[in-house]
Image 1 (tube, one colour):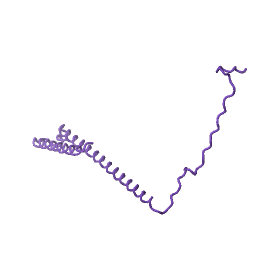
Image 2: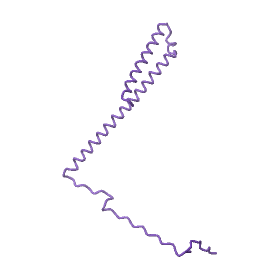
Image 3: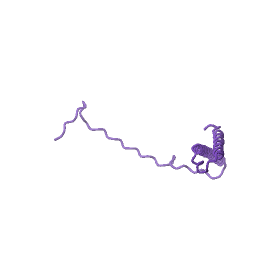
Image 4: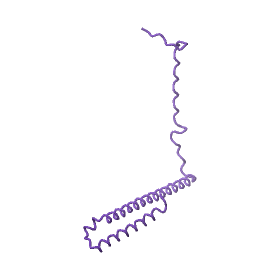
Length: 130
Protein backbone atom coordinates (compact mmCIF):
# COMPACT_ATOMS: atom_id res chain seq x y z
CA UNK A 1 0.00 0.00 0.00
CA UNK A 2 1.08 3.54 -0.59
CA UNK A 3 2.41 5.56 2.26
CA UNK A 4 -0.33 8.18 1.87
CA UNK A 5 -3.19 5.66 1.94
CA UNK A 6 -4.02 6.18 5.60
CA UNK A 7 -4.17 9.95 5.19
CA UNK A 8 -6.41 9.63 2.13
CA UNK A 9 -8.81 7.34 3.98
CA UNK A 10 -8.95 9.70 6.96
CA UNK A 11 -9.80 12.63 4.66
CA UNK A 12 -12.50 10.55 2.94
CA UNK A 13 -13.98 9.61 6.30
CA UNK A 14 -14.06 13.24 7.44
CA UNK A 15 -15.77 14.38 4.24
CA UNK A 16 -18.33 11.55 4.39
CA UNK A 17 -19.13 12.32 8.03
CA UNK A 18 -19.55 16.00 7.12
CA UNK A 19 -21.97 15.08 4.31
CA UNK A 20 -23.92 12.83 6.70
CA UNK A 21 -24.20 15.59 9.29
CA UNK A 22 -25.27 18.04 6.59
CA UNK A 23 -28.02 15.68 5.42
CA UNK A 24 -29.22 15.02 8.97
CA UNK A 25 -29.38 18.77 9.63
CA UNK A 26 -31.32 19.32 6.42
CA UNK A 27 -33.86 16.63 7.29
CA UNK A 28 -34.28 17.87 10.85
CA UNK A 29 -34.85 21.45 9.58
CA UNK A 30 -37.56 20.09 7.30
CA UNK A 31 -39.21 18.52 10.32
CA UNK A 32 -38.85 14.90 9.26
CA UNK A 33 -39.45 12.37 12.05
CA UNK A 34 -36.58 10.18 13.33
CA UNK A 35 -37.90 6.89 11.85
CA UNK A 36 -38.17 8.55 8.44
CA UNK A 37 -34.62 9.93 8.76
CA UNK A 38 -33.27 6.42 9.34
CA UNK A 39 -35.02 5.24 6.16
CA UNK A 40 -33.68 8.11 4.04
CA UNK A 41 -31.61 6.71 1.18
CA UNK A 42 -28.89 9.36 1.31
CA UNK A 43 -28.45 8.89 5.07
CA UNK A 44 -28.12 5.13 4.53
CA UNK A 45 -25.63 5.72 1.73
CA UNK A 46 -23.44 8.05 3.80
CA UNK A 47 -23.49 5.73 6.82
CA UNK A 48 -22.53 2.75 4.66
CA UNK A 49 -19.67 4.71 3.10
CA UNK A 50 -18.37 5.75 6.54
CA UNK A 51 -18.56 2.13 7.70
CA UNK A 52 -16.65 0.96 4.60
CA UNK A 53 -13.89 3.51 5.17
CA UNK A 54 -13.68 2.47 8.83
CA UNK A 55 -13.23 -1.15 7.73
CA UNK A 56 -10.46 -0.12 5.33
CA UNK A 57 -8.71 1.84 8.08
CA UNK A 58 -8.98 -1.14 10.41
CA UNK A 59 -7.48 -3.53 7.85
CA UNK A 60 -4.69 -1.02 7.17
CA UNK A 61 -3.94 -0.87 10.91
CA UNK A 62 -3.85 -4.70 11.02
CA UNK A 63 -1.33 -4.78 8.18
CA UNK A 64 0.84 -2.15 9.88
CA UNK A 65 0.74 -4.13 13.13
CA UNK A 66 1.74 -7.31 11.30
CA UNK A 67 4.72 -5.49 9.73
CA UNK A 68 5.79 -4.17 13.14
CA UNK A 69 5.54 -7.63 14.69
CA UNK A 70 7.59 -9.11 11.86
CA UNK A 71 10.25 -6.40 12.26
CA UNK A 72 10.44 -7.06 16.02
CA UNK A 73 10.76 -10.80 15.43
CA UNK A 74 13.47 -10.24 12.84
CA UNK A 75 15.38 -7.96 15.22
CA UNK A 76 15.02 -10.57 17.97
CA UNK A 77 16.40 -13.30 15.71
CA UNK A 78 19.30 -11.07 14.69
CA UNK A 79 20.08 -10.32 18.34
CA UNK A 80 19.93 -14.02 19.20
CA UNK A 81 22.22 -14.87 16.30
CA UNK A 82 24.67 -12.17 17.39
CA UNK A 83 24.58 -13.58 20.93
CA UNK A 84 25.36 -17.08 19.65
CA UNK A 85 28.31 -15.77 17.65
CA UNK A 86 29.72 -14.10 20.77
CA UNK A 87 29.23 -17.30 22.79
CA UNK A 88 30.97 -19.39 20.12
CA UNK A 89 34.21 -17.46 20.56
CA UNK A 90 34.29 -17.88 24.34
CA UNK A 91 36.15 -20.80 25.92
CA UNK A 92 33.93 -23.13 27.86
CA UNK A 93 32.01 -26.15 26.86
CA UNK A 94 33.53 -28.15 24.01
CA UNK A 95 31.31 -28.45 20.99
CA UNK A 96 29.52 -31.73 20.56
CA UNK A 97 30.02 -33.59 17.28
CA UNK A 98 26.98 -33.58 15.06
CA UNK A 99 25.10 -36.78 14.45
CA UNK A 100 25.24 -38.35 11.02
CA UNK A 101 28.61 -36.75 10.24
CA UNK A 102 31.91 -38.43 9.47
CA UNK A 103 31.81 -40.91 12.36
CA UNK A 104 28.52 -42.48 11.28
CA UNK A 105 27.91 -45.86 9.71
CA UNK A 106 28.81 -46.30 6.11
CA UNK A 107 26.19 -47.33 3.63
CA UNK A 108 26.38 -50.83 2.20
CA UNK A 109 27.19 -51.08 -1.46
CA UNK A 110 24.35 -52.42 -3.58
CA UNK A 111 25.05 -55.77 -5.23
CA UNK A 112 25.50 -55.55 -8.97
CA UNK A 113 22.92 -57.14 -11.23
CA UNK A 114 23.99 -60.18 -13.20
CA UNK A 115 24.21 -59.82 -16.90
CA UNK A 116 21.54 -61.58 -18.94
CA UNK A 117 22.44 -65.08 -20.14
CA UNK A 118 23.38 -65.89 -23.71
CA UNK A 119 20.62 -65.00 -26.08
CA UNK A 120 20.14 -64.57 -29.75
CA UNK A 121 22.83 -62.39 -31.21
CA UNK A 122 20.71 -60.60 -33.78
CA UNK A 123 18.07 -59.45 -31.32
CA UNK A 124 15.40 -61.93 -32.44
CA UNK A 125 13.15 -63.51 -29.84
CA UNK A 126 14.07 -66.89 -28.44
CA UNK A 127 11.77 -69.73 -29.45
CA UNK A 128 8.97 -70.35 -26.93
CA UNK A 129 9.07 -73.56 -24.95
CA UNK A 130 6.07 -75.90 -25.20
